[in-house]
Amino acid sequence: MSIRMFEGFKFSKLPTPLHDMDPRAKFVLTIGIFAVALLFSNIYALSAVLLIQMPLVYMAKSTRRWMKSMKGGALLALLIFAMNFITGTSFTFLLSMTIRFLSIISSFSIFFMTTSPDDLGLALERMRIPYTLCFTFTTAVRLVPTMALDAQTVVDAQKSRGLELEKGNLLKRIRNYVPILIPLIVNAIRRSVELAEALESRAFGTTEKREPLVVLKMRLTDYLTVLTTIAFVVIAVYINLYVPLPTFDIPIRMPHIWPWMRWQP
Amino acid sequence: MIKTEMLHFAYPTGDEVLKGIDLEIEDSEFVAIMGENGAGKTTLIKHFNGLNKPTKGRVLIDGVDTRKRSVASISRDVGLVFQNPDHQLFCETVKEEVSFSLKNFGYDEATIERRTNSILETLDLSEYCDSSPFTLSGGERKRVALASVLVWNPKHVVLDEPTIGQDYLQKDRLRNFILQLVSQRKTVIMVTHDVEFVAECKPRVLLLSRGNVVADGPAHKILSDDGLANQCSLIRPQMSSLMSSLKDLGLAQDVIDVYTARSCLLEAFRKVR
Image (cartoon, rainbow over all chains, first blue to last red; front, side):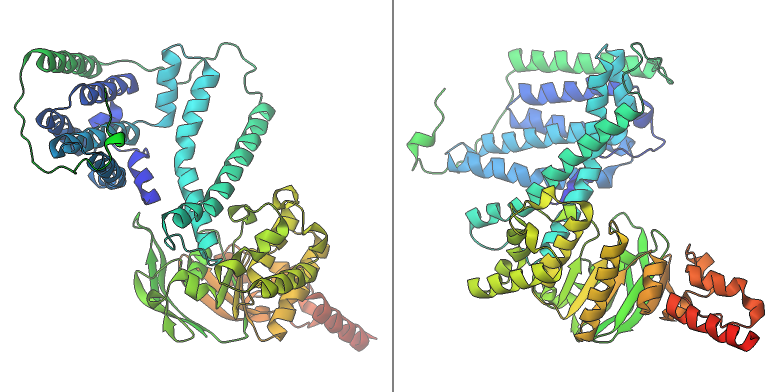
């Protein structure tokens, strides 16, 4: 999985209606899509959840970067697909689970591509979450691209010392990642200590009550987005409870060679 | 020999960092690559061991296109020492760290032991062989990173900012060590902003600016040129500035190091007497 996948979760400033939207409205929209994706296990319904996000991707003018997150997600989806297949799940159900996973990845990709960490922090503060927690969260989000760059440099440095990540059997390949993970973790800890010291040197946390420079204000379009999302979730719950949805079955199934692996509810 | 032919490179974001670089670096040559921040120096040297592949043009290492070999295979010939040692240190002891690459290249235990001890001694790190690399100072970690590459004795050595974090004594040792590598007929290529260090080593200087080579020649010619220095955000070495300020005495203007400056000044004094 390439670290370019993170590009699909990185904010970049663009003049689009989705970028201008209030982060709280966008968050409600994302959580709405997330909840509906979890609600259904029907393949048609989940496909619809994935498809209704397409206009949002188009609106955000970030199709190429969205594709990167989807490509990265597709590899993990393939793993979910394979794990479900070897445990004897029906083909239709495992397709549904893969689409569900992609829908969730897509909704968060759209949210993070169009919401700046600053706006996210402001939104959290308005939700009366303590500033230190908001700051920790936004810093973590902000550091994701930096960590991705760091990871690429570490991979390059270790490759230059003859490390071949794709060499050997599965166990060896997993062990090959130790020289990548340790420098990354050590650097992250070192960076967090330095950041804490820098913050303390700049009087972080001295003022009890902070006055934000920018005050978030919900506009009509933001209220409409929230209302539409709520309506969307309510309709989805209704359909899930009372409307029988069509489905199909693909008769491909792994023989039950490992009955002990089958999940029993 | 390291050769680039019309080398272009752009990152996936579309930014073209290298814009048609043609250069030849002969075996056992000593080259310093200099230029402003973002000129493309590190991007260029990452082509020498195949970490970056050209988007246009090609890079040949001893006549073989880097596209046709893996990074691990090219690395046997081209040892690249990264700027920040923290991007590669991960072992419990310095000795394990230094021997990591030898294990990757499949050397036998006796050779690993012999080579590791030898390089640790050369780089003044023997006393730390059982220490954790994470407990060492920045300069010491940098030397561990250097040792971990030089240990497999690559034919071409590429150093990214080797003088960062080194005190004057260590810098002087590093200079002697690099000159020793050159005398052992190794190609040494270093990326650096340290003009004084380059002035003392006097290698061939390649000056990069915005992805192009703007000057290529001996250090005393390039570093004493005020126009080039301004173009590439460099400050001329102190000796070069001194000689410029004493221009009226008829002193040579392409002097960049203390020893040459001293003999020029002595000669001028003798004439005055």
